[in-house]
Length: 176
Ligand code: AMP
Image (cartoon, rainbow, N blue to C red; front, side, top):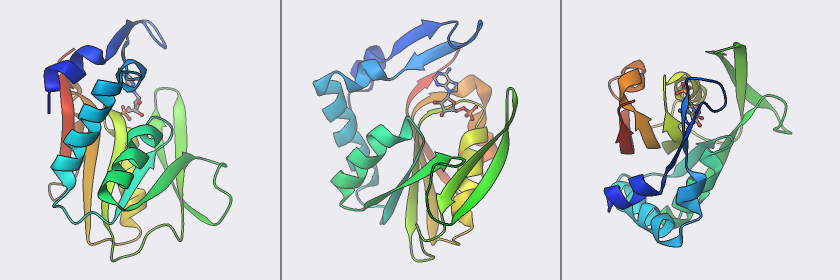
């Protein structure tokens, strides 16, 4: 995978959504056909031999590469959504955000204990969002959980929040 090419396609927006944040904008990656295909091919190579049976994406930026990768792997895609969006019975998990609690949900019939699950989101910062997603997925007692991000903000050490038996990969790493 041409990491430098993909890295250069990600736009940095200073002070968004609040002063002091360096926002990594992946929309500029997605709009570039060569970068999108490069990332899709690269992720497929990373996971093609991992026995993945479902890709689980986190709302909302995990809903872009998640289904693309699921298609490449020829497996199903499952959404984790913000509270109140999924229509059928759900499991839910709450976690701390900057301003109070946030809640995410998954359909109770979305996964089984036979699944090998690849959790995907665009970016790893503190890890709070993905840790809550891992807890949701663990309710199904799956065979294995793997975690993938396009971007990792290494200085925030978010990957230390995950259990040691969970494989955590990121494509692009930044030190901010
Ligand atoms: P965290 O739970 O702290 O790991 O934050 C991860 C979530 O917040 C992801 O869904 C990201 O899309 C978003 N996020 C946090 N920080 C940034 C950033 N600097 N640039 C872009 N997205 C971010």
